[in-house]
Length: 404
Image 1: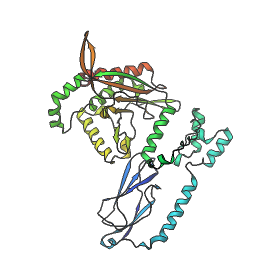
Image 2 (image 1 turned 30 degrees about the vertical axis):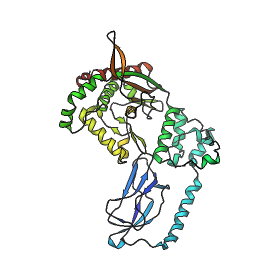
Image 3 (image 1 turned 180 degrees about the horizontal axis):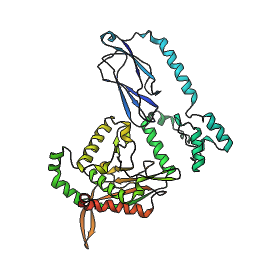
Image 4 (image 1 turned 60 degrees about the vertical axis):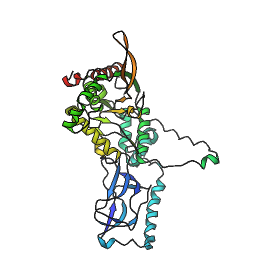
């Protein structure tokens, strides 16, 4: 029986994807639930499985093309009857495909404002570049113009992208041009938006990791035997962050127009590096979880992130983010905010350094901590206090147990 393979629902607010890789070619036999194609969205990578055992008859959309939810990806023949490759005489079917791609190319990289939005922009003497569009492909809608007028906050006029400098012919022959994935494009856009929007500032401190390291050494075997997961550092930092957020609620807030939204819940994002780029799965209601539950959740997220198996809902709704550059050897960094959050904690490598203790120089395992924060919401005193509270909790982990 002939079947159609279409783009599945990709999650809230995700309307399109890019065909990343076909795992099968026309004529290949496929088992039920075996991956056929990989779709890249601006949040995650999604594999589309075979709906039944059969044969991939025809690929309609090639790798690198952008498709909308519900679009036809391929034709599929169910059962043994589909074992023969599709005849090559399918060329007439390729003509509509080219015709369908033409309108999309004609649209250009940006969508014009909606008619209602265009009229209002003209009336107010504004341009579409001054308003952040929430419509499909960034289209400016009427409500976007109204929101910009109400809040008085408009996006800066976009500057034309600088042309690439000429490259010598010999050098050009040795270059490789690779199209950015949807995820990488989104990472680039969000990082730049954070710099353009927030009044970012970073404050630093260092922390003596000796007490936590001794605690891990003493209990790691018993902890792993009982809970089935290794006792790492991240669980301690998540617990310490939650205690600090409760004391300094501004770091757990965000700006919405002219309002400050204080969040009385603690969804902690943990940045994970993958081959496709940085993703931030969220440990939801982390304040209600034990140390073991946090470690299990982070470990599961890390494995599935590297395999591209995270769901979109697992990377939404975070209120604060922790990133650990220390796993790559970073000594110090200034992390960029994960908007619209107002704070992000950067961890770094542990390094034995000489420090003064009770009038004597001793060698201690030290780590630099960096807190980047949105100065529009968080005052300098609050930021410094927040980081000091984390330092106190890590250097005296009994505080985490006693909720001090």
